[in-house]
Image 1 (cartoon, rainbow, N blue to C red):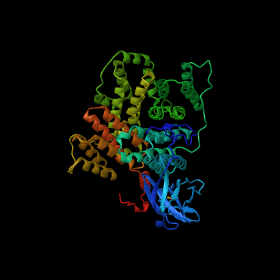
Image 2 (tube, rainbow, N blue to C red):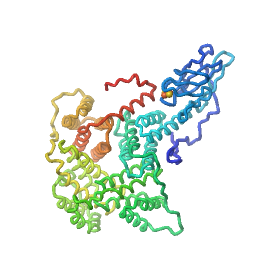
Image 3 (cartoon, protein in one colour):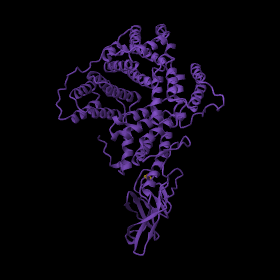
Image 4 (cartoon, rainbow, N blue to C red):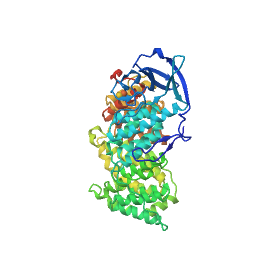
Length: 611
Ligand code: FES
């Protein structure tokens, strides 16, 4: 079914409607239930008619039918009791008007009530509209969306998980749940792109890499992190400049944008960007400006500015630029507020070297466009691991002048990032984020060249090269990597048994054993989709943080980009090492599982907690 999105207030931004109009609820069809004499006074009876669950009561000789699922947590209303016309749910004691379904709690949703008839044949009938099934679905979706906003405001993983379970059960498209989260996350923060909206964007990108049974869990991760990074209060609204017959030139607006970012004036830069969006600048023009500004400074925010710029455009494409006036804004905060590494003492020595290269950016760009050369990606990945940044930058410049595609250099950088991660020694524990940053940065730069193939972006290659050399200490000592052909002593009955063992190794943080198993699995040629889904499951069942999701996404995408088995193996080893070495908590998993149980109508008291 196709749906429309309507922009409303920020809190209830997206409402689903049927394109062909509201379902027909006037045209009632009466269905026989049972003999009136079978009803006990005040006692509920459950019925199920064509997908509609009913609780029917007799009180003082009259019959009343309501939806059998409590709007609070789905407990069967037929188990409830009636006192003086008040229907009481027996789980958390919400109270409803039996006749109309109205909820006595100020914040509670109403129960849907249905008309009944006692006919001459002594049978009780209930009237259901022809469009009742559709109407019920839209009621659930509307309630789920309200619940989701509440869960986000309350920062409650359980409320969020309940909303997600209800929405997905009613077949609300995942795209719209992600869209709602992205919009909320952008609208409710004065900070820049956060881990929450980034995880939501990654969920959109990795949807097919994740077992469908884990899809809800992925959404809950992204939404919960979004809630934690927002306050519930909206940002100060900012709009495009008023329209005029004498509009500013594109050059003027672009100059202003870069000027106000330079001056660290977020509000002014936001207004210029919103004006460009309002004046229908093309997606590629806006991308070129954002990526240019992200590389005007050295490795801004340890690469996060460029990384989140890429996520901004991926997210906007995913939602077809609907709500772009909000979703575009946070990246300005990242561009303005994050560390410019040329201002740090750590990078001070690199400035003369890099500025020397950037002085002839035009020449490098022209040579690159005029020439054409292949890159041996595995060999250049090794080059990226050298110690001397000046030497490495000279190598990168030489490849660019020879006509190597910038995206191939990004791939080599990502491959080197995978090796840095796989060789990351556990004694460096506190520095895990650094290897994740360069790995994710290399991928973001690869993607950025697809959005905005421009000379300014070449600077990002040199920023990444410098940072890569700074990470060499993280491979000292260098962790061992399973040798090609190395096997575990254990015998496995099937590839499935191998993946089960992988989960157990992860549970016990047996990092090297997990890597050996993944290496063996790949070399034996087993199903890669199943491996990707297992690694994603291992990540999702923990309260994973952003970098873990980034590692998975980059590993999977760069695995897919190459046919070289060793390059593929290294990407998977990097992801395996990163996610198994870090033990976190399982609260999001438990909230999601509980919400799914409730959605199915199971009782939490039946839960066995031995898994
Ligand atoms: S009050 Fe009905 S399920 Fe909680």
